[in-house]
Length: 190
Image (cartoon, rainbow, N blue to C red; front, side):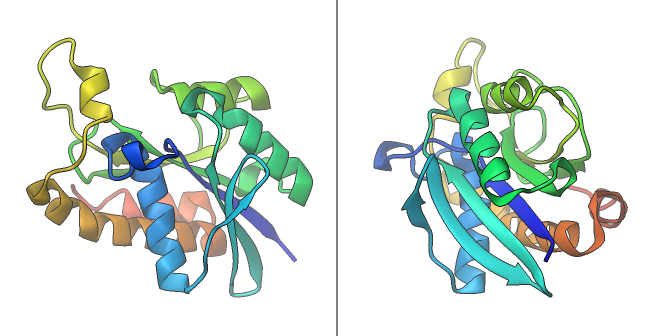
């Protein structure tokens, strides 16, 4: 049976719930809810398992600090013998407008500490990532406050349908691969 590891990046703890930096967690929470599965507190993270048309899918919300996310990714890839091409990391992105979704098969960490550590630990930047736009409407020097701030009600209304779209992107990634999924979803604007 083919196995996949879908990693949503974020920070654990109630003080971070609903913050922009936790967009990856939000997408996995939505997928778990839609799949009627629950996360269990396991080694290096909260893990839920499901299957999509005969493929086993592990959802991982690392419990490490964001800048140590690679430890959780490496552990679960090794534990479940998941190949690099079956890894998808979901991450917030300041460079994209709020709610924009971009799937890529590889790329730089673009200054994101979570992606940077994953790249360092895996020794490659050739893994798929889904970037969730959180916008960058903050004054100069206020980036940390922005990413650790919560979405307001208006932003949540924009984001909610995009989170649901992100769960469809994950399913397509598992069933059809990154290239097909990029062609199908990246053309959509916003």
